[in-house]
Length: 243
Image 1: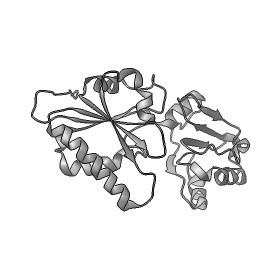
Image 2: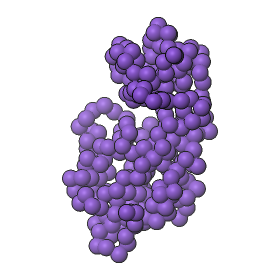
Image 3: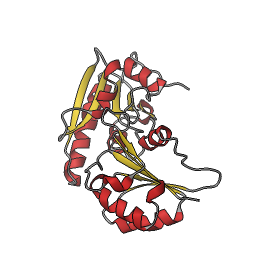
Image 4: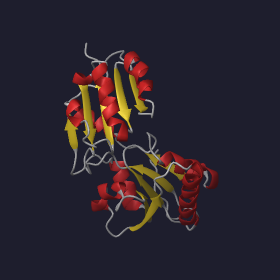
């Protein structure tokens, strides 16, 4: 059954909308319909950034909409982060209780390595579940693989999608045991990841991409050339074993 924006009920509806990896043509028809239909759009922005990446993606379809940017601190302090998510959830709750339908934008897919998950946890405590709807979006690794015509998995092969942790050695058993591994949240660990891929002789069949779909999009199969490049932010690496 299709979710419909209901402006006649006492309470509004909440939509967590995935707007894809960056290319505004990779937004689903459903996402476009919801964004155009709601009364208010909430867009997350890191306090270290001048604009919301998610809002930048949909700027062509948000003309005339009331937009609220919610600024989040780029810290690891769980107390501060939880306070920020509670504040955001309560701002959305106020809109919902006023009878307004709301779209909350998030890049990629809302439920795949997305901070939207933390907002959802808070909202679920204060808004009825029937008023919460999540609209899926295309992930960065799907977009990267398509751009490079890079097969992800075939037949009975195994796929792992994991974030890069502080301890790079934790990647070794995953890379050994899966046919294809998607590495997310590469950030400042890019050089160490490349060193490991070279050591394990997986570097020649790896694909790197950053800012997929944005003006500064960068894609390469030559990962060794990326050392000390600082290109780890908003990037993904796909590693596929050579057979």
